[in-house]
Image 1 (tube, rainbow, N blue to C red):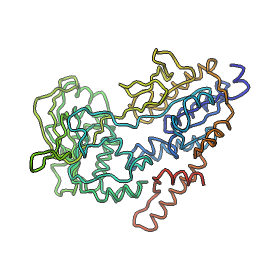
Image 2 (cartoon, rainbow, N blue to C red):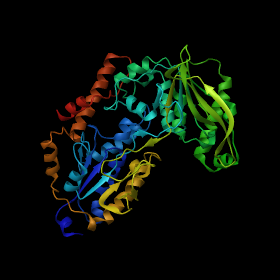
Image 3 (cartoon, one colour):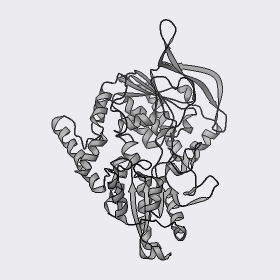
Image 4 (cartoon, helix red, strand yellow):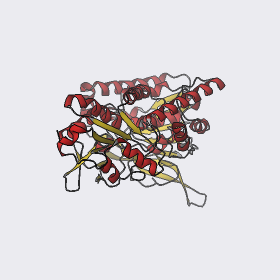
Length: 473
């Protein structure tokens, strides 16, 4: 061990207080005894509240949210990781500031933008990125308070869990979301929605979907919403049959879909809303509405797909047959894309920080000493939240093995970074502040329960200024 780190803790900044950042901080804190090291860890986030993706990226009625938040809460409640929220790296603090105050920096900034869908009409009014919609219904403080929910027929493009979340929220009756932490402004907008049909489109077959069984089954729990499938979409090639035989998850989902297909023939009553699941549909164009004089309205009026067919390997090829669907809104849920961190090398094609096993690389492929990445900004937006733990372990192993070569901070004292933030007038928030905000949201839920007919556990605070004020009171 270096002489410096034998006399003081290794100062580590983790940028991003979502699951990736908390897991990395936790693994690092627990590694101290095993490796005979001391770490002083500061966990930064640009938002006043912690938990990132769990708070602002997952549907409020998702059944596993509470369990994950409890686990993250338990980690932070130990007191060996310091939270500094409402701090934007690149604005409030520069990369140079971090390098001056910390021996190592781990970026866990995630992926919050929508991946591009390059088809004609994507720019029309009524064409939305799913990530933006998710941020709105989750009460993200940097997004508008309203959302244009005017469409009766809606298309959701994508066959992953985010597509299902978006479709479920769009098709669900607003009052059935009141038992969640849904913000009041979101409830009011959803309550006015005239939606009757939500269509979810995937380009491959039922055996190739990217859903997980739990998220798929959640669709059937929505009250007064029929699930509608088309028998023509149930095509299985040799690769599909093999996947069903060898993978229990795929087998479960195919069985679920097949049962729904059979059950819909036995319905005696129709629900007021329908959620359609389509497969083997490749989007080719979002269609624009026309005025009486033939000019374009600038608004979505439909969407065109090419019918696909499986090629024997589980992949698809076009058939040359095209299908049009009348819709007034299109939501693109084809994946997330990471945001560049100013001053850190970035892969524009993959949407990740340049890295090898979590070590951040420069443009020549050399490790930038003391600089690391973990989570989606490291590997891309793939895998479930639980996969982030293994990802963080790899990054922390690299950091620990590099201890002797870390560039030593000029101002490693724990108070120094706080003094810098205060000198710049940054209204940073802390873990103690989050506990105040947490209690405030729970009290809002109690008040809403007392004044209404639905029991509400909490009501999420949306305005950033309110979150900061409550946290710093």
